[in-house]
Length: 148
Image (tube, rainbow, N blue to C red; front, side):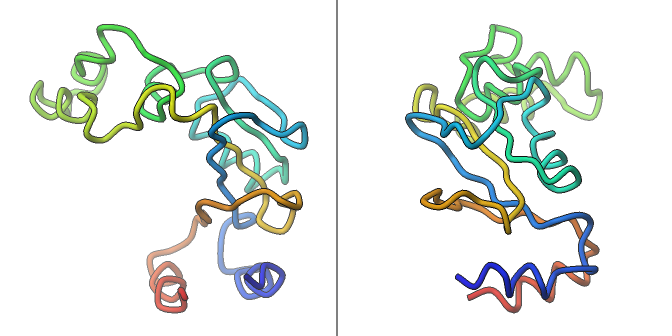
C-alpha cells in the first residue's frame, strides 16, 4: 500500500489527516497512548491532533461504545437497549433492543481495544484494519471509486 501517495492525494480534500484504525486482539503496543474518552473520539485525536491513541476497557468514557465494540460487558440497561430509548427519543424499543442484542456488536472478549493513528504515522508492524476520512459526499465517492 502506497501510504505516502494516499496521504498526498487526500491532502486538502479531507478534514484533518486520514486515520488508520487497528483492532488489537491481544495486547496494545506501547507506541499508542490510552485516553479516557468516548471510543469514537479516538478518531478526532488522530485526525486533528496527530496522536496515536487507543481505547480499551479501562481507557474509555462511554460504556455503551465500549460495549458495542466488545471491550466491556455493559450493564442491563445497555444490553437491553433501554439506554438508547431512555436518552435518544428517535429509537423505539424494538430498534434499541435489536441494535444492542448482539447482531450489531462485536462479541465480548474477542477484542482488547482499538487504536487510531494518523495514516502516515502508523508504527512499523501494525496492521491497518480500516482507513477513516471525514470529507464531503463528493470526495467520498471519488475515494470509493479509486479503492483497489
